[in-house]
Length: 530
Image 1 (spheres, rainbow, N blue to C red):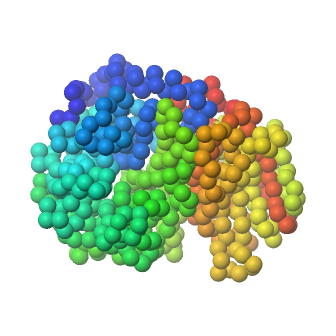
Image 2: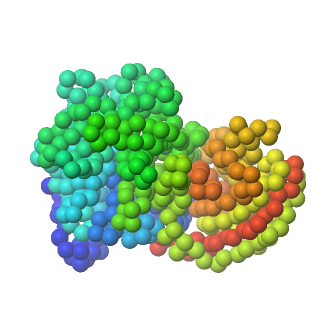
């Protein structure tokens, strides 16, 4: 049994218990205290204080969505384990709609020989939810819960069910008892003959330098005894040397394919699409792609968690790192994303439609021409917590897009733009970018290059942008084929404007819609519309 207290096992009683729970009240007080920070997002999930890292175990249980995440409670004293990781637990939030989140008590605290609870994923069964996570220097472990809000977790008596021995040269990695392979972040699923788990690690070299990414697969009939079946996938072709396969999420995505969504300590969020052979338990990637294109340590996308919900959607959420000096809280989560395959088996992505419920005060512009080599200011329209939907015909422009979070004098602004293929050669893709070079005048914000990802438009295809701006985070979705994410920190309160621009040739704005977005956090309701 985890933790010092147990909650009732009926939903009504649990909700009443949470009203007087000291830990949850502490989160509320912390959020109220942090509300004055202009970087606090209105409609993204942010840390209730201190440290938020990898999202874990996204799942839908009895109609509600649960998201866990690496969280370090305050008040820990340095111990034998590295202080920056000691005491890492599974923080916990719940939502009815993937949009409005509520803090719940920590789900998993370190227990027994565990110095911390690192990343892992969950499996939902009819009568229970199984969490599999990595216990540094011990191995991979299990916890189970079945109450309505997943407040009561019990450790498996055989923990760690996939044991490992200390590797003093790596943060948290564990060797198998025979030294044949490493053990790290797991995920878990079920097939007809029992349970399967991946351990996302590397081999043949050093992480982030020259290693080979690998995901080992294990099988168990009863959760107690696990057999190593070898590598499910290893990649020395599609990824860069030095990329591991941490934080794996492995689910079917349709068209006879699986999507392996994971994290590289060298390049952050990435994915494989391919076929999984249930007879041999081997995964053959057909394509590889990235979710992050810049330095992930400076304000970019980080690690994923994913699930299949009751609607059959493949859903993913990432955490996003800071791009400024650490303060009283760190990191935010992305909006929930829906992934699916097109007929040609390429990946498609979009924000979940539930977000549209946050929209209010719609303003529109267009159709109109955006002049070449000029900046067209949109008077009386803008904000720091908004959604923008823009449809633009590219024409023959060299670059076009929007400046957002723009101060009246342009001293602060973030550029969202698209470049066509180079020199008219279709072999070179177009590029979507978020350029933060002028995003912030604050002295504690780290400089970084633009976040730039490939996006080629077909002849006659317009650029369809959905831009989510939430004070210190921007997520840009384009044509259901690309998404870029970046942290920005406008210092000025009047950095809320929007302008349009085109280079070399004019372009046609078919339509532009801007909505203010409601806050999902009570303490930030007063910031709506600003």
